[in-house]
Each structure stands twice: as structure tokens, then as C-alpha cells.
Length: 427
Image (cartoon, rainbow, N blue to C red; front, side, top):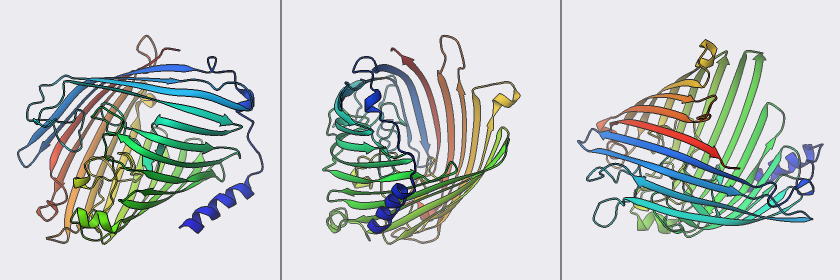
């Protein structure tokens, strides 16, 4: 895998014919290029499990992010910072604590906190088109991707280098030594010892892009990722896109023993084809998990006793990830999806997405051949103008049904999410 990764990066360098303009040479200054944004987020998630448990959380979040420009000169210096605050709006008694909601982490008493606050900052240096950043940050890479799909986002503390010296080629390398869980205060609330990441992506043509990444989570696992995306324009109104994503994970022997697991290897991949015609999109996708690990594909930022490993809640660049991730041991899944853009009928900003996913061949410690299926619906509206411009309202629901054979892996239930996001550009 290492040889393949290096080969891709070499091909990218050899194939590049145009270097980018020098970003640092065009720097306007620390203050002149700075920005401050505030996101007001009201979020609600309810999960009605079919084992007679009903979990729900509702909160108001305030997410402030500041990004300075770089000082002028050969080496530019800047600062990025964020501040997070959340207020719990529901009673919370007996309904918090679901693994997949996690707005407010329950305390020793079992009750969630009424509010939480935290912040972070990172110093950054830029030479030409290469940036080194150290401190608290929110990386978004296939092998380390922070979760921003709940009330407050995750963050990580460490060093990340991002280089874009050649047009179309992006290289990333870094090491992070702490993780801040999205539902808890403090910089090291996720249990991460350290994670090293390395990789890059190259835009070969306007239609084709490929990526290769690897990571090493200390005492937990090693992971590799390969991705490729190709878009074939058919005419002005139609296109056909193919998206491939694949992971290989290898758990450390000590982690397997400590957690009473079976097996240590998993490979999972998905291939999606999307046909777009006017306001309509039609998607067909297949996803497959193989290997001997009873965790299936392991990822995520916390709760290690439930298979989370410390690489971020969005580190699953796979087609069939909705409420269920369809990532069990030996699982095979198929998706049929549809989307519609209502601007074609005079309602700009309104969109609808539907997906039906069915998985089978699930293996657990007690059975084989289990199944699960999910029906996903999402309606989203973004205000197009006026004082509330860019305010978005997103309502999504999932109906998940899991066979008795698969009950060790997943639980049936109905889910509802309502998110209202209002971004404000202060300057």
C-alpha cells in the first residue's frame, strides 16, 4: 500500500505542468485577510428503538470561528481559533446517552450537563503554498475526519502540514495527540493517545480525481484509504458520476485482546454511480465488507468499548452510510437513491433526497446471514435572500429494521433529526 501511495504522488508530480501562484507572496496581512464567523445551530435528534427505549436530545449551539490572515514576508504567521457553547433545551432524564446522538455526555449520575463550553486555537505558518498548523483544529481527511453532524463539532490537537505547491496536487501529513469529544469539555475527552496521518489527492483531469491516505492510531489500528471520482458530462443537462471509496484496517493485537474481540482485519469498499438529468439525480451503489474482525469497519472518536477507535466520527467516506453504516462483518449492501432540486419548479433553495439501502450476509458471534434495511428521507431548505439569507432548515428521517440474526450488531428503530443552522459573517 505504501508503494502504491508513493507511486500516485510521483505520478501527480510528473503529470503536473503548471505550478500554482505563490499564496504567501500575495498575502494582504494578518488583519486584512482575517474573518470571524458565528454559526447558530438548533438541533434535535430522536431515536425510538424497537427494544422499547426512546432516546432524544435537543440543544442550542453557538459555534464561533476566527481565522486570521498571514503576515507578509517569506514566512507568513497566523492564528485560527474557535469557541463553542451549548445549552440543553430538553429535560434529558432517561433519554440521553444514545451512542449516536451524543449532544451532552452523561455524567456519573446518568444525567447530562445543562450546558458545555470549550475553545481552542492553533498557530499557523505558511511558505509559498505550504501551511503548517499546530494546535486545536478540525481536520477533514478520509482517515481523520471530525464530526460536525451533531450539536457541536469534534476537534483534535496536533500538527498538520498541507501542501499545494503543484496545481491539482494536495499533500497532507500530521500527528495528533488529543481529541475533544463533541459532547464534553476539555481538549482530551476522547481517549486518543496519538494518530499519525499521511496522504494526498491529485486532480488528474477536470473529470477525474484520486486519493490515497494512511493512518496509524497508537495501540489501536492501522488504516489505509483509496478513493477515486470520475464525472462524465453527457450534455449541458446530464452527467454520469462514479465514486469509489475503500478502506483497509488492521487492529493491534493488544487492542483485540483487551476488548475481547475476534479477528483483526477488515476491508470495506463502496462504488456509487449517479445519473443527473436536470433537477433529478438517480443513484445506485454497492458496498461490501470482508475480513475476520467482528467489529467490521471500525472508526469513530470515542466509546472504545463500542468499537470507536479515535479517528473522528466522519471517517467513513462510504456510499451507504446513513443512520446505519452497513459496515458489519461480511456485510453486503445495495442502495437506490433519488434527489430533486425544487428550483426547477420555482422554489430555489429547497431540495429532497431519498435512499433505500438493504444489507445482508451479516456475521455475528452467534449467527450468519443476518440482514438490515433502511429507508432514508431528507428535506432541506436554504433561505436565498433577506436578513435570514443562508439560514437552513434540514429535516431527515430514517426507518431502520434489523433482523433477529443481526441484533448483536444493530438495533431496529425510527429516527428523526431537525437541524436549523444560521451562519453569520461578522467580518
